[in-house]
Image 1 (tube, rainbow, N blue to C red):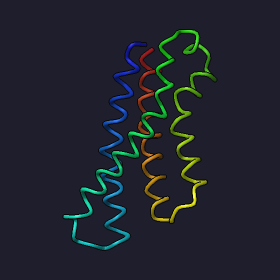
Image 2 (image 1 turned 45 degrees about the vertical axis):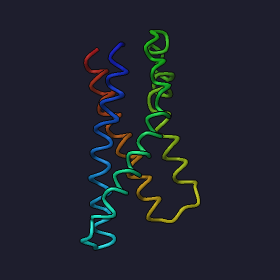
Image 3 (image 1 turned 120 degrees about the horizontal axis):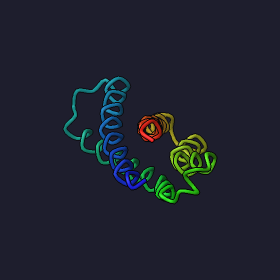
Image 4 (image 1 turned 90 degrees about the vertical axis):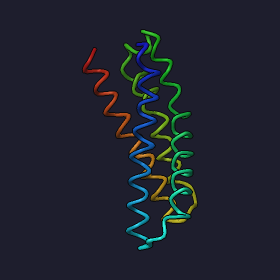
Length: 126
């Protein structure tokens, strides 16, 4: 299970790239603006920061290196997916404007999907 730290880093990288692309598309559709000189760096910075928050929230997955935790399926799911699910629940319950909520949910959803794909590949490999 020494692959988990590498896998979490890969999830973070893929999630940042996909989240930035998705939020840029969302911004372009919702704002209908052609001026990306000021907004693109802000989008990249904010989405990266959100992904860092989700990444830190998923760090309890590092406990899965311990075989008793990995062998217990409920504990494995809670440790592996708990951080991103809690982030999505928090984004739903916060009092923020709808466009900001959409960005939070897109970022959290993309991280969760990428995380689930890498989990499937990890379990399939074992």
